[in-house]
Figure 1 (cartoon, rainbow, N blue to C red):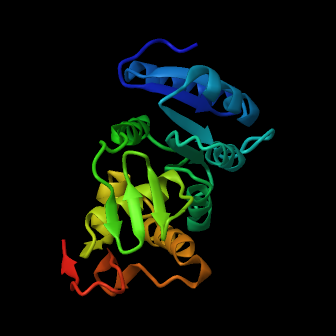
Figure 2: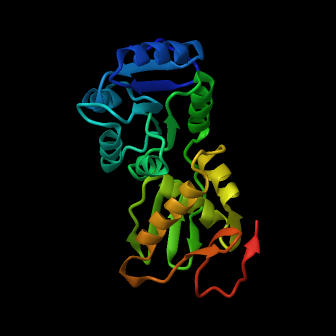
Amino acid sequence: MGVTGGCGRVLLVDDDAAIRRSLGRGLRLNGFTVDLADGGRTALAKVADTEPDVVVLDVSMPDLDGIAVCRHFRTDGNDIPVLMLSALDEVADRVAGLQAGGDDYLVKPFALDELVLRLHALLRRRPAAATDAVRVGGLVIDAAARTARLDGRPVELTRREFELLDVLGRNAGLVLSRDQLLDRVWGYDFEVRTDAVDTFVSYLRRKLEAGGRPRIVHTVRGVGFVLRDDHSTEGERRA
């Protein structure tokens, strides 16, 4: 059981005992409460028992790898922030981590200060305050309920997909640059940068355009993206 700390409760998952000890000690010294898990299956059990604020999850584990663990969280409807750790540093590896539902991806080796900074960034991201739902054409985005409906039907979105759609919805008709979306959705200068934004826009389009529905998330070449109803008469504006 972790030592009580004021920065938040972290579940640290890694099959390497030395990494668990060193990172656990470093995070505690930085004010976090830390619980440890030595594998993916243990992590699934401990998330239910300890109710952490964030999970630091190694990707390469023998019993159940981090990608599978993260997918399990999201399939179960658990939107806990997940920061993935891996020695795999190719863009394809990072995108795979994001696609599985990860919120961040940090390549080993890394400095403890960077890990702490990223954890603080994830923990600053609290659920949106209850406000009126945003409506753009047939799309309704309810930040309080964290739901989206298109033409009356629910749209199943991951945590990150919903946050991106919510930002676009609250700025409907405004063209947001990739940097603006990174700042507002990810909350800091994310490593993958353009790949992260474009990848998640493609995920949104796949779901919002299912069944031949018209495009609602548009690309403005050389600028960024805009959420706009095709039947709207309003022009695009830059944020």
